[in-house]
Image (cartoon, rainbow, N blue to C red):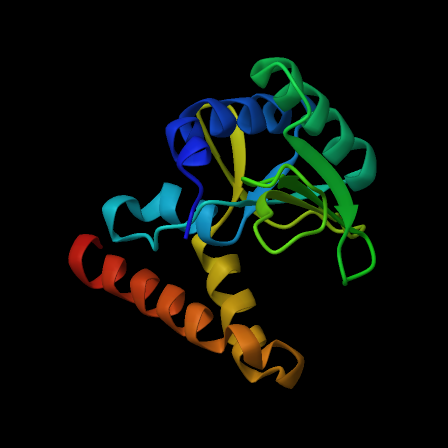
Length: 167
């Protein structure tokens, strides 16, 4: 269950994250990218997935901006299981790091040397739906990502539905 404080402040948190993404010319990918491009058909999601040349630095800067906005130590950064990814986490009700109630608000992943095709929306770069579809199909086939197969299949079906309805 999502923390009440987080829900009440989601718009401010999202705005802060997007301001940082825009400033650093980073790329939003995953469910938020799909949602932005297909609108109400997108899967509800809380966290942001961002491709960055400097993921650790970007995560720390976002944490700093969020803490300034929320006037206190409510967020922290930790390295993810996948090397090159850093998570900005909300502390949750217990206000302690690395506990069950922590909630991810942004994941910053190292941008590989090749920049994927993007679509510019309101000055923010989002990975294209074609690229999102390729990534989802690849993840569905990969046994290492079996834990998220249901989400990826759902996202793929939502992209297909958008094409049927609007294209």
